[in-house]
Figure (cartoon, one colour):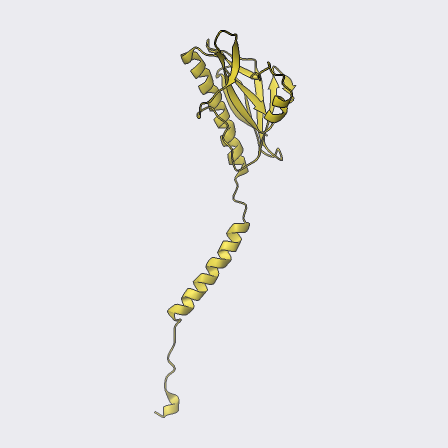
Length: 185
């Protein structure tokens, strides 16, 4: 066979070429992932609503077992629990509860709360606005009470929604259960 007719050898990719391609694909994938909104709004609203319902049941149980009155006060974007405690030689007053279990937990989604007490919508203010409007001898009082006899008063309906109100859940007084959590359409 003549020298010019030597069979062509197939050449594969070198390791360096493969590594460069993988690096480029990884960088492009990183840009795509950064631009994707990874928040799961319906799940966040559902979980926060279920957590609120469970915390309210926990506060009710705690009131029964400890023989102390508990309460919850709402703001447009959060809530806080209170207990009725007696100070030395004075009337009992509502005090902020310092229990890590009964606290609002921030989420990656901005939530909004609306509250109806006994069928009447309540205008919610931020904690700062409420505190600014109090006189020295006034304290904040809860919207809903968890009494030591097991009652939860008054009847309530709380709507938890995302900032656009696309996803909503309702936490309300139940007939068979003390606190019910449902998704709203």
